[in-house]
Image 1 (cartoon, rainbow, N blue to C red):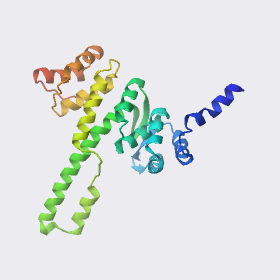
Image 2: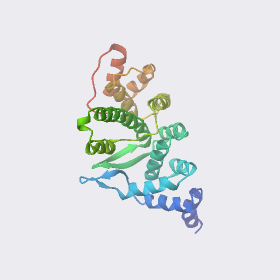
Image 3: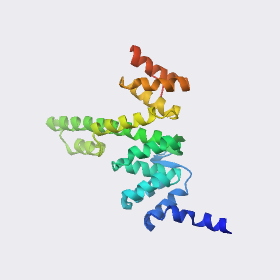
Length: 248
């Protein structure tokens, strides 16, 4: 009986720091065995689960979201992490270090592709995606400026199209570069970092032809995992030999 009582009230003790409304959204998300992107399946319909996470984002405090990111179930951790990244939380470095150590993972459906991914990998991926968003926004601004100059095409239809394509971000490239440097150090200073995330950073830097000054730290993982991805990046750094991986 005592054990039953403990199990019944454990969620209350764990999530007593959440307001009733936030906790309600948390419980709804907890019913799902997977996280979902905004649009899913072949038809690209909007995920109801994603909508719930957006509602939670609107009312939850930073402290509540941080609490979920560290102590929630995997699906809630995934969504909480994305919210903290969007909010440029100061706890991102601490959270990333925690995920690298804990090896927490979650099942995710992005579009019509699903699979299991580490939360450390997903948090790192946010940085890469955000930089792509910034680059896209720069291109769109140049395009819009060129449309304004060309009076023949300066019509509401063209300008409305540019507005639809416009993307927003709270980050700057300088801030993202600073954060990714910190994440790299966390990964490479931990001998237990997963093969997947080390391969990811190697594949990314190889694709962008970036030789990081701390590439020698990667040597340990090349020996540990005997990975072709890691080996290709080290060859690029040492000898200028550039072989792009098929995927990363």
